[in-house]
Image (cartoon, rainbow, N blue to C red):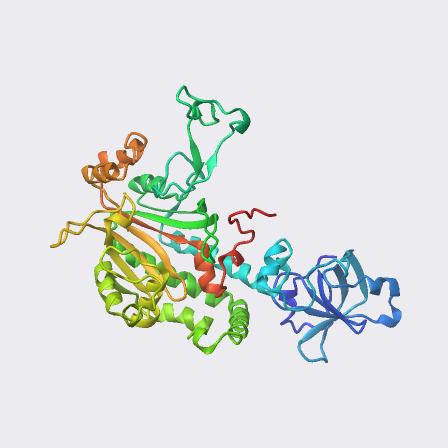
Length: 481
């Protein structure tokens, strides 16, 4: 018999209809009441067994985690906590679950413990909620760009270039480590490797995206990216997903407008389409906050924080203006910042970004025109200021609780300026000749930005650790499952 999703039944009033539900046992009480969840919703449906007329051996197999199929009429529930329930006429155990060994019991488990059993944590309400919100955000991103005529470009995962110039990349090779071919000078002879050259997993699809934007107008990529940064923080992953649009004929203001519009669109979509999940996560977060000292508790709950970003126009100011604000700030004057702002040229840390958003402006912030020395080679250079300081047309969007949510810039479209900057940063022009062709043939102003998808999911779900918003986190010394 075809089974019905629990989500479709919980608000049904078609009493008496005979249905089949398939799912996993959450609890079994008094040898009579089975709470069944099939993953379609956070809610369980109650199935009531007539234990007087059910085989005792079968009843013993109804354990937490077991997969079952129950069939019977949908009836109005007389008990508290549910509107409907199933009066069980037939019950089948589809898959047993040994209660002595199944690690998920009907109690609260720590997120750290659940990370150790990430292959089973999907069965908890917390992760059901997280991954439904993640699904909605992913769909909203594609819908946003599709509605605006963007081309979805699949940029390569294996690349021969380092878009960021950071050098923290995972190498891709088929060479035998025990018998590596060498050149006369002792260096590795990559001509014998699969691609005939040194290749890596990509840190960004941006450079390839620029090539397409200079013909297709507006494009976006949304795919996996990798960074071999030996970082064990709550904000870093070795494998993560990036949304990266590139737009021809966009200057910095156009870039900022689009990024703000995108963030508001997807947050609104999640609030509209995942109200139950977000309410569950909001309540969960409030419970967690009760265990913290008052001074460490968030000023806004999850829904208030999301609406905070929807209800405010993002404050726009230059890096130079931000440095002046931070230098004068009380945390800096009283040496409360972990990293004190000594002066212009400092690389802003999360504590500084959050101060600007949460304390000073009390709204999301877009910082522009950063020092050239702390930004990538491809960003458009401004004319030096009166003090000779060099800046680039970069923009970062800062959010409460997170810090940087978006990083982008107007790209350097002038060939001479770009090659000069590459030379300064020791980026070999010969290897990037294909990229420079976009500046040789029909160059034009263009811009783009990147959004770390897991950071976006982290913000919308309110989770404290980025490892809990991706199904199987990849971090230093951890590539399980």
